[in-house]
Length: 275
Image (cartoon, rainbow, N blue to C red; front, side, top):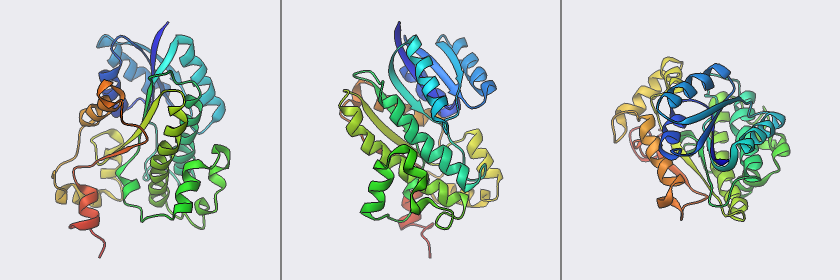
């Protein structure tokens, strides 16, 4: 029985981090679609990693609990890479909140109950959370600390308040950042750490859906006027994930790392600033 790294969401960002932190450990790759998990497992297995797969629906507590049990059967759970989610072009506001907000809170709670001493979690959030106008201190605390099963009942998350998928996505991602900060307190009692990464436009299939979707022109404009002048790669996110989960990151917990090539800077203080 060795150490286990659980990757939830078998896409390119989760894989990129896993490659850097899973040598000599067992990877459990979980995804809503078994075929996605199988394809990612083949790639990692061919590269010499020890890999198993599982199916998970992060919006279901029973499903997440089953994943925890499966992971524990392979050994001590020393790392969680939570990279599952849906984009605004892929889902309704209700589904975005259920998967991206509730699902993340659920994963943090369930895996926070079993994470090994010295272990670490990374949540893949989004630059979108940094473009939501400031919330009140009370709203921040509600998103951070409301019991998971009560979260979607908050008045601020009802359909009359969250009317479109983009708003649902932004508030979910802000919620992820706040939840990670609150959970870092609880994880710390187990001697474990947890952080978030908020990537900008990273060239993944999900980003391609957005670039080809109704907001595609806006996304291309973001890239053009950003300081970097380009989109990012999964490997660049992988490098930050490796820092957070590795020996050089042991003083970092409860943090959210924005890495978007300067898009958010341009949004608040540059050419993308709302008129």
